[in-house]
Image (cartoon, rainbow, N blue to C red; front, side):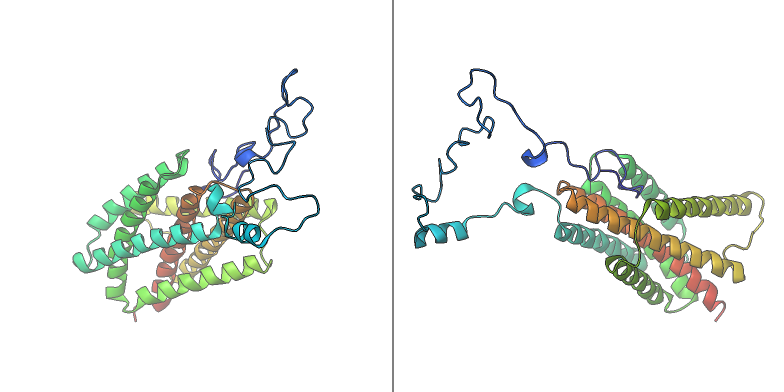
Length: 303
């Protein structure tokens, strides 16, 4: 399976090999085998479905099961997702919670440990987090330690930056958190109710806008650092429009995450892929939070 989300589209991500868990493969017994002609293939129990029955004696045709047999069947473990090692929604929720808790804890550490207006350590942590995030995105196998490391570094950077913003605009931190939570809830409801459908056309348009947005921000950053020219993309009415577009793109990334997770669960992806889903959701939420922080700062101005 291929996902439109850049994080989930790596080879090996959210895929099930042919014949996973015994499906999709058929083995034909060789000629002369005692199982030749057996519709169950090489299964030695194919001709007798009650051979090696863990619930006791083979029942007679049409005979009801005894009370003891019914109790044993009821108490036997089911072959659900947990037993087969497949990814479930609970796995995604648990891994995402761990990742976000790591991010928040690191952010709290930076908030209380660093002095005000300290961008140095925040910049270093953010740069390392970017490198780690790229490694995770292009790594074929899932690495939970790297994902938690990314969350810690990103959280530390966000904590330091948020403290600076909150010093200038008191209360902006809680406003940005509530705004991010509202966007997440709105997108989840819109996706689950079918108001937003992740189609190929929807994905192409969204990715094109995202690429243009990132390119524009890079040009603005280079122009500001090298030539000292400000294109006004982070202030005034144009800054508000850019901030709204940035938040909209973050919501778009969330919709891709939801679609990728839903399809992965339906396809029976391995349980460890829930970490990749957690990483994708964390990336989208961080994007929305940063854009929300900037937008609120512009709207509040100098008050």
